[in-house]
Image 1 (tube, each protein chain N blue to C red):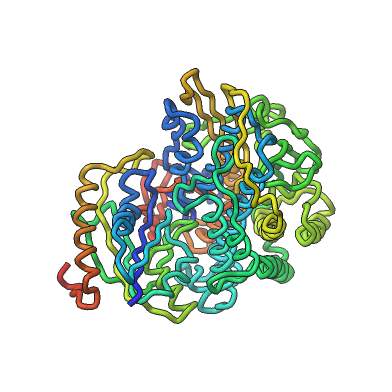
Image 2 (tube, rainbow over the protein chains, first blue to last red):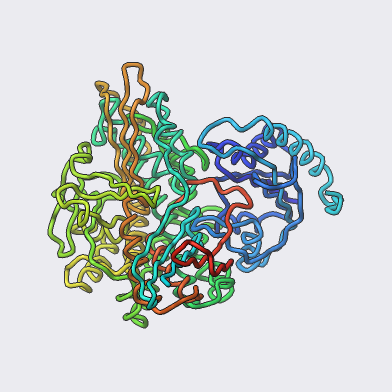
Length: 152
Length: 483
C-alpha cells in the first residue's frame, strides 16, 4: 500500500505550521511505504500527487477542532474554499477522481492550534497537541487498513 | 431610505474582503468601497532582525506568493551587501530569474484554470457550486489536466531553484546558494515522472492564449465593456523598454500611453510614489506624487505591465503582444477583463524564458555569491504575478533592520479594484434593493480579474465563511445571504 502524509500550512505563522511539523516528525524516522510532502496550502497539482497513492492523510492546523486533534475519514467533495489560490482536501480528492479516476482512502488529521501571528515558534498548547497527534499517527500507520474510523 | 449593501467576504480571493455598496432612496448607487478586513502591519515584525535573514523570514508573510517576497527581499539585501541588483554573477541572476519565471508560470496557470476558466467556460452566471475548477474538470477534462500539469511544472521549477517548497533559501544577499544540476536541467527540458518537458509547456501556454482569444471573439462586448475605466499603469521595464519581470527601471504611463514616470531608478521610489490612508480601509492607496492623490493612482499586474512595456523579448509572446496592442490601436488597455488576456501572454512569455534559461550553460557554473561595500539602505522591486512588489529596508551598525516598508502588489491595485467594483455596481446594481446572485457574481468577477491576495497566508481550517449582508443607512442588517 502506498501511503502519503501531506502536511500544509505556513510555519512562519505559529500554529499554522502544525501540518508541516507533523510531516517533519514522520520524516525523522522513515516508514517503509510511507512518503511525505508539505506545502503552504493544497492546490490543484496535488490531485496528481494524491492519484499516485492508495491512502492519504492530510495534516492541517485547525482553529476549532476538538483538542488535541480530530482524525476523520474524508471523501471527494466539490467544495471550493473562499480563497483564490487554495483548495480543501475534499476538493483535491474530487479533482483527483475527475482527472485521474483514482479514489484513494483519505483522512484529515486536524490538529488544534491557538496562535496565528507572523512569528515562530508555535504555542506550547499546540506543541502538546502535535505530540499527541504524532503518536496517534504512528500507531495508525502500523495497520491503516484495520483502522476503525468510528473510534475517533 | 438610503441603503447600504454589503458583500463579505468575496469568494475565491484570499482572506476576508468586504464590499459595501451605498444606494440612495431611488436605488441609485452613490458610493462603493472594497474593504480589506485583515490588518497587514507586518513591517514591525522586521525590526531588530538581521538583514541577511530577510529573504527567508519574509516568506512567512504569504503562502501564496512566497517566492516574490523571497526575491524582492533578496534584491534589497543585494544592495545592502554592496553588490546591487545588476552586480550578481550571471549564474546567480539567471537562477533567480528561473525561479521567478517558474513562479510566474505556475501562478498565472493557476489563476487561469482555477479562477478565470470557470467563469469563461461555465458562464459567469453559472451556479457557484459548479462554477469552479472541478466543474471545469467535469466538462473539459483535458483542459483541467493541462492546468494541473502547468501549475506542477512551475512548482517543480521553484523547488529546484529555491531548494524546497516551504521557506526556500535559494536567494541569499549577493547571490544564490545553488546552481542547477545537469540532471535537473534535463528533467525540465525532456520531462519527468509523467510530466512533459518545457516545449509542451510552451505549446499549452499558446493554447491558453488561443482559448481566451476565441472566447473574446464570441463575447466581445462583455469582455471589452465590463469594468472598463481609464487608468494609469505602472511597472518595471527593462532599460530598453522590454517587458522584464525580474528587474528594470520604473515606468508609468497614462491612459493615452504617455510616460508620466520616465524609467527612474527604483532605489528612489519614495521620491515618486506616496501612500494615502483612508479611514475605512487598512490597505493604503499608493499614488504618483507628480500627479497627485486624486489622479495619481495606477494599475499594476499583467495589464499594467503590457501597457508600460514597448515589446516582449521572446518571439511567440511578442507576436501575441502585437495583436494585443493592435486591438486598442496602440493605446493602453483599460478593460478589467483584458487583465486575463495580458496574463496569458505573460504565461507564454514565462514559458519561453524558462526554455531559454534551461538551455543556458551559465546555470551550471559555480560563481554563486558576490560581495561589495556594505550600504545602510536597500530597495528591492520585482514584478510579482499580481504586480509590482516593493521591499525597502534600512539597517543600523549592528546589521539589524531598523526600518522596513513594503508595498505589495494588491495594495498597488487597491484603487483600481475599488474603481472596478464601482463600475459594475453603478451599471448592474442601481435599482436593486436586495443582493442577487448576478450582483454577487459581477462584483467577484471584477475583483478576481486583479487576482488579489488579501490575507497573506493563514488559512487554517474553519476560517473562510462567505456572508452577504444588506444594511440600511443606519447600519442595520436588513438582508443576509451565505454561500
